[in-house]
Length: 348
Ligand SMILES: NC(=O)c1ccc[n+]([C@@H]2O[C@H](COP(=O)([O-])OP(=O)(O)OC[C@H]3O[C@@H](n4cnc5c(N)ncnc54)[C@H](O)[C@@H]3O)[C@@H](O)[C@H]2O)c1
Ligand SMILES: [Zn+2]
Image (cartoon, rainbow, N blue to C red):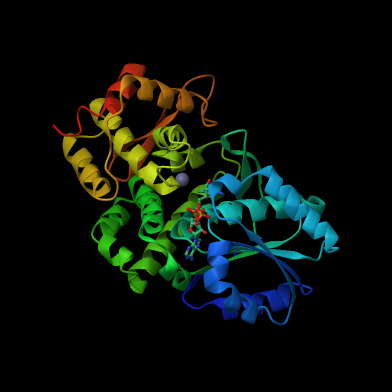
């Protein structure tokens, strides 16, 4: 895949577009990103005919109504197969823009410029595009790879702290599922990431992109090893959707999911107490786990039972089995999940 990572790389994007497009560009962004960077990007696109579609920010807009509105605009503008869609924003913009690109006229080219840490290290890699439907996340979508992805670290400087945390959660996940040294590197550099240390961010982003690319290349359509990317996501998604996606952003929920799922792994002796404590200490700095009551636990379990990852009613878990190593399980006892979510172990 064509991925460029660096600071101030819009000139590289401009060169790439000069070579690879016939000049018609449809830029999809959102209001926040537009506010900070629309002048900058339009400056670099001044040689092209550009139309801009600006989304209202937020997961609640990642739906088919917005997609339909974008199709209408593309048709009104007579955009043909030579149109190149540029996705300029976080994961929400990227998932929508990629889905539109994969379906409009049975597919037009698109280029990604992810603008959040989470989108730079996760959602822009791997070709998954789509929208939410009837309250279910990413229910409608496809696999569709961009022509190129430009990851400009400079863009992260306008992100707020919680959005950085969201990306840090997914970064730590790569360490825990694939590369313990990376987990250690990140653990000792968390403050540097929040302080936008360019060197640290570049190492972290490059490594994360490498790991995700490697896992995805072995399993493009998500039937096998790619499942390990879902560590923290079984319980994380349950909690995210229990709170109607309002209380925690994606990465924050995944941090919680990784804490609870690591606890499960410790309880069934897949990992020892020492490793669990190490994971807990790092993740607990970012988001604190909470204790849920019986009613809440049942609701979260209900959400987890409907997860797309499940097979034949069994809840699928990805659990740590050693440092930087995870495996897939589908036989975790419901009582253990309940005990985990009850949180009575948190303050012991
Ligand atoms: N396709 C995949 O493989 C994949 C993987 C993981 C997550 N996702 C999806 O990604 C989405 C979450 O992505 P996200 O965390 O980037 O959320 P997001 O796109 O909602 O962005 C978070 C917030 O940051 C703002 N923002 C974006 N860039 C900014 C910048 N540079 N400066 C200031 N503000 C900025 C946005 O306007 C938004 O308010 C979810 O919909 C999730 O399902 C997809
Ligand atoms: Zn995720």
